[in-house]
Length: 178
Image 1 (cartoon, rainbow, N blue to C red):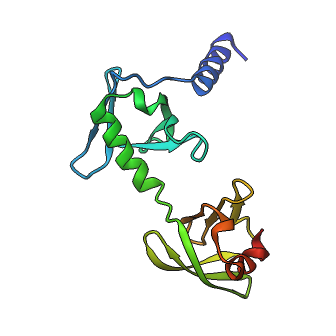
Image 2 (image 1 turned 120 degrees about the vertical axis):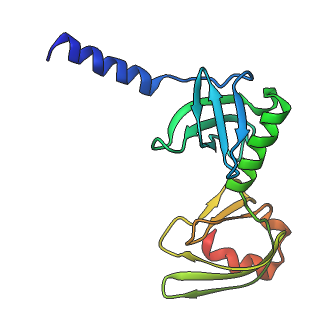
């Protein structure tokens, strides 16, 4: 391998492992289609995605900004959303709200196990809902002794904030997943 080839690989490796910090001077805006765009360092990114790196433990810190049109390549990280200008913070929070829509389950009417799937009928803070999860997957994640996240077959997320606040009957229905 030539020195030139090695230098290309070293440069690519450095680019892939670099952590770029998004500054408050970088400008977020909304496109006519309602998407989030970013102007940073003389470059314009027409559509960016915002990914929470710690969605449950530190939701407004360490947000990855990714170029939607470029294989979700990371552009940079916002260390603290609260350090961003108000307009940028507002636009980013709108995008996060859409991306991380997670209804909170308040009541479980029933769970039926059939053919490898569990069919839930619940009441959430957003209204009554029915969804299914695959029994063979890790659809239910324990975030703590009492807090659960449930991912359905359509990749929607539901949260149970405190299992102990459910009735005994509701907890018995969940026993299969705990």
